[in-house]
Image 1 (cartoon, helix red, strand yellow):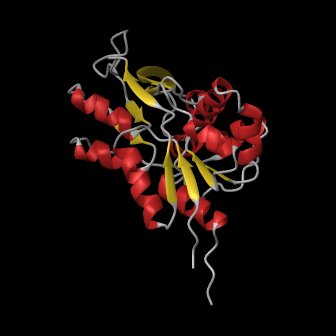
Image 2 (cartoon, rainbow, N blue to C red):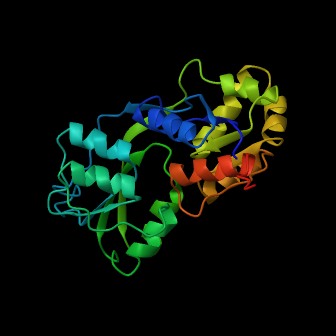
Length: 255
């Protein structure tokens, strides 16, 4: 039997948080929703008509479902450019918006996409459309394999006002697990703890709980701040992260 665990989740306060709460409840956990990210669109969209010098863009890379939704609302299409998406959720959203998705890496990360496109993009003009907190791994990796890369910042990710109740719970030992879905959620959690004067206690509380992170970059960020990481799922999806964190915090025993 799996015992209930209190699990903090830091996704934006939209359908992603609602889905996360529903999933955690289905796993027998008690969700502690504490949004650490809020989306602010910039109004910019990728220019696929030309690259600023009369040359057309060959490939557009989309890295998130949020980015796809912003572009769809703006009426943007990739035109004749090939479209690559990081992860099945991003690809599904793009297809739902009427786009043809040509490439999705087996590993849902920036480095995974670079590996997928290596040998394909040499000499191509590549447009990467994403948030203002995108990893340099993607841009640098694509340039290293020969692409001419331009980045369009579709949206900014900011910390919502009033966030951080979970930091107080962590400091008080009231969390059994947390699910960090990006380096920015780690940094914003710590900033919120600092505002409340409980940063040191919150980190100590996390180190008594189960800390789950969605991938290697998030793990590196957490560990750089003295947070011990217990769970990194094989695939960078929230479903796998949540399931692994709950299982680690409250293993299923068979009588």
